[in-house]
Image (cartoon, rainbow over all chains, first blue to last red; front, side):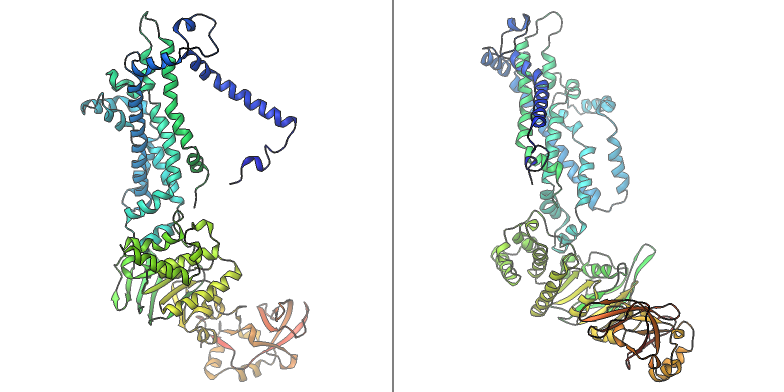
Amino acid sequence: MPRANESGMVRKRGVGYWLTHLGLIIGVLFIFFPIWLAFVASTVSQQEIVRPPMPLWPGDQFIENYTAALFSGVNVPVAKMLLNSLIMALGIALGKIVISLLSAFAIVYFNFPGRRFFFWMIFLTLMLPVEVRIVPTFQVIANFGMLNSYSGLIFPLIASATATFLFRQYFMTVPDELAEAARVDGARPMQFFWHILLPMSRTNIAALFVILFIYGWNQYLWPLLITTDPEMNTIVMGIRQMFPSGDDVADWPVIMATSILAMIPPIIVVISMQKLFIRGLVDSEK
Amino acid sequence: MATLKLDGLKKSFGDTKVIHGIDIDIAEGEFIVIVGPSGCGKSTLLRMVAGLETVTSGEIQINGVRVNDLEPMDRNIAMVFQNYALYPHMNVFDNMAYGLKIAKTPKPEIAERVQTAAKLLQLEDFLQRRPRELSGGQRQRVAMGRAIVRRPAVFLFDEPLSNLDAKLRVQMRLEIRELQRSLGVTALYVTHDQVEAMTLADRMIVMNDGVADQIGAPLDVYKNPATTFVAGFIGSPATNFFGTDEVTVNRNKALMSAFSDAERAVLEKPATMIGVRPEHLQVCEPHDAYLTLSVNYSEALGAETLIHGKLPMGTAITIRQNGHLPLPEGGQELGAVWSENSVMVFDQNGKRV
């Protein structure tokens, strides 16, 4: 693939070139500034934060604050919340991918009665946000006794109309001859799925994994509803739980350290899968 | 290696009849080409033999065994697809080996069979490459390799050369023919290209609208087309067709000397068509001519010249003549005669008399 800097666009040098970069740098600084502030706040002491003006350069409490956050936290150690979030996000992302792959496979390659009907039923649920069905969902989960459990966190969010739709669209671009060639080669439907369709979809899977992992990681309302036990708190809602009610003083450095820690896993996922992610979005590799 | 028999084979999609009944007995090692224009049902026919389409009625037999209800893999066939249908994420070796792996062939045997096929197809240096790193011709060879390693009873080709450029097509055509001969496998080959059909086939099936208009050896089909469709489809440029009223000059002489009694009887009826191939027409003196045409334009192709013109009633006509003969100009009036025994008469249903 030709890189952008070899072909047009950024190639020309001169005032325009530097102005473009200046603009980009300002934009990046603008976006990065709040994160920087959060980082700074997580490395100073409580007194320094509450005393105006706010510090703009990191202090010397880095190790203390992060140790405090990770291993004791406010209600529950952040390490525990990170683990909870990780299990939930992985469960949601992998579960969604497995289920969508299988349902898209069924919808595209099998001619069963009501195929279109089922597809449109799945597609319709796209239009229902979680919030709309949250009360009945809560009822169901509560009846199953899944409150305060990983399964309760994961299962209600595990089906994905979006991912099913995306995989369906992708499968429909795979030439029919490929399925026929596999059939002539003697592959059973599931062998075709495992040996051919799945490896061909790997870039799409990676792209979807990134998106869904972040989706799962950022879940707020649902964990807030069904986890009452601090041991089951996820990190995104856990941050909220750290704010004291009433007149207690918020432990800002620890909260900020928690926020920074909460950002790290999604960043790792994005960066480590960036190559596959972009390929998944850009080319279909036929 | 096997015989293949199609018996009254029919196919409909819902109420639409696509294939109206094909019968053919194919001998062991025979190369059969199914040729016809787009939409005539030739690919459907092939896919029925492959087991990718169900059979509406009739029977397919391979080696005398009815295979109508068998899965493709149980029919002992291999198919080469038009767009090759190579698995894009597998290298050449795995592409060829996939069918054998599914069949749980022992690994050393897979390796040996793939190596043999690769050697035959000059693919040895490419076994580790992905399909997208190969040229069109190489992909084509991989697709054939995939068919060869399975040692099928019948080879099925679905327009395998139509995605290649003209030069490569000629080369691959020869290779396919050689390969099929040396392996001695029965082959069924679908194409819309009559040159492929003429050069490859032991026998060809000329299909028109779901009907096998004619089944026969290429030269027989060329010399004795059974219908106007076959006469028009096989041979290039296409056969000239005109009504009896176009035969103006020396009409009586022409009709008397050129046609048999049976033909003459039919010629009296309306809607009868006379067909003459462009290569059987010669320019001649006006007083000897059976046909008079006014020239529209001439195409000089070097070895030969194509003269395009119009007969008095407006029917288009083409004459193919040797390239060293003088080139007629546009607007010129020419006389033409057909060589003996080259004229064909078709009745009002398009059937040869």
